[in-house]
Length: 234
Image 1 (cartoon, rainbow, N blue to C red):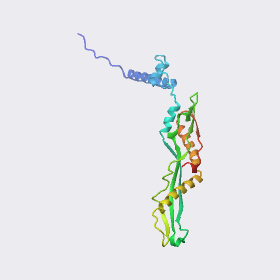
Image 2: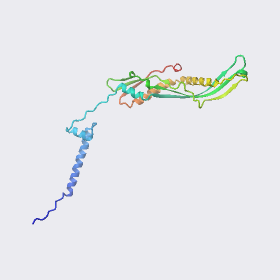
Image 3: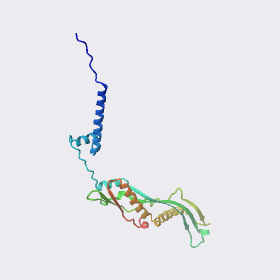
Image 4: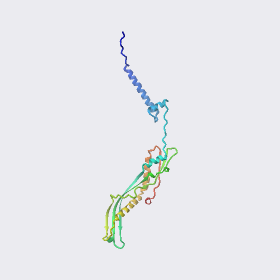
């Protein structure tokens, strides 16, 4: 009569040995992947290094001048320089026949305004971006700087009439303040031009664009077209 035999279970050291071998294999796979490097996954790099599969061929990224132009145009306006100016403007109406205390009209206006200058990047043309034959360098020639708000310089909320003196027999002139505000915009723009706002905007724009284009993995050279005479531009 045969006795029932209970199946023998593997002893604990065998489990330990299996775990150690698994760890060694995984670690070896990881180290092989690090040594082989490349853009593939860890397993792909290891298998390609062992000759089991072929290594993937990287596709070079080609950056064209048109692509760079489209990227720059998306910025639209590069506002680089802002001048805030305050001026006291005087306008008067006189009668050559009579003295001002009788027929004159004098108005003082405290004018506040802001002049904004920069570069309109939507004016950039394809010919303004040149990529070197080796694809490692590109040159950008920016449009000339300009005043962005020549007709809206005056801050109407902060501009006010400081004083008005009318002669005893002066005819009514409801347009005198309007004329003062028009003169104020012209004088504020002239003041900004005297401070060379377009020259500052040209240099600030070149520096700003150089910093922006540094994100491309290429050497960048940025030139700026000279700004036109400020007082003759608008």
